Length: 80
Image (cartoon, helix red, strand yellow):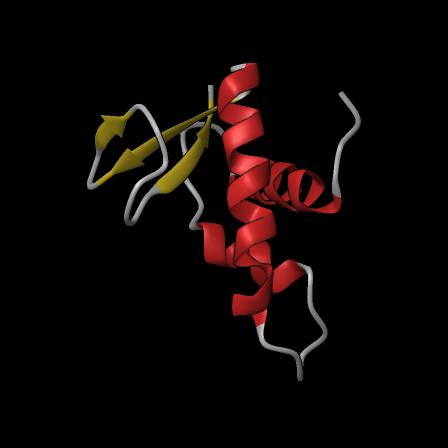
């Protein structure tokens, strides 16, 4: 599986955050834009990458500390 820019942004943020820590998908979207651009326009790309990474088993999702099986509503991303 080739890594998209969105997957790379997610992986880099998780590496920077450290073991056992989570990130918000919006943080990854903000990595994909220039300072004056609207990061919200990248959220579909981030969500697609998250879905692929969950399917591949490389990340898990949670909300308020509770695991969630699929992306729906607000969520946090962690390494598996």
